[in-house]
Image (cartoon, rainbow, N blue to C red; front, side, top):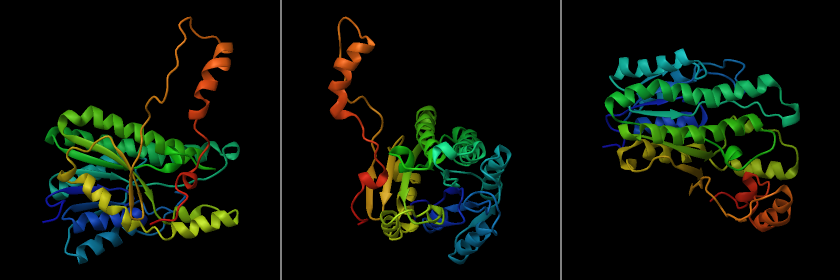
Length: 303
């Protein structure tokens, strides 16, 4: 018995990288899989083969069941078709993995409007479209689970990724809203921030020796390390886990924090800009967040 026996899972961007490992792991866990992949390049501009069909063959060779879908997550009609394909072929849809993504990295002051929109469309709008397309089916059956890919670029910060970071942090808020709104229907929603070497990460420009060393460390973190957490979160074993954010870094799993008040300060007569400068901010100063990036929070090598 696999943890996902009798379940049907839709994996977006399921033909390459982390998505491919997700698709194969879901099949090994007993799920029937809808492997969605547009086949686009890492920047979303070109179509490069039919990786979804290749993964379907791999699953078939393992003795599993899967179908390919070549739609775009940034198109709502395509999103609805993905859900329909699952129901038409397998009778139901139980789980969604929102994994599809592209990168258009650029320093903020040089980022074009098109670079902003294209990344937001795929990551944030795409996650909403797929999740919304599945929501009615989940609500009617009073069961379902989502796993969404977020990133420490949004949770913590990174250079040159304003579009990606904004989308990925937006996905966290979307996941929490889904968990709150659909919890009454036994629908769960969680996020994973993955650390893994993929072709998308391989597009990040190397500008100095420190960046080169970091990239070499990233190569040690293979995508298959992320899949067990996704399988678990989609399974019935995780029935009490919802609205959470996890990070997976090689053999390490982190439960990530969420925004909560850190400190408060009170002034009975109220505040003026001057008293804020004189009193409030000096009191808060030791707790202000520095401009950290992921490598500042995780300075040790993957273990």
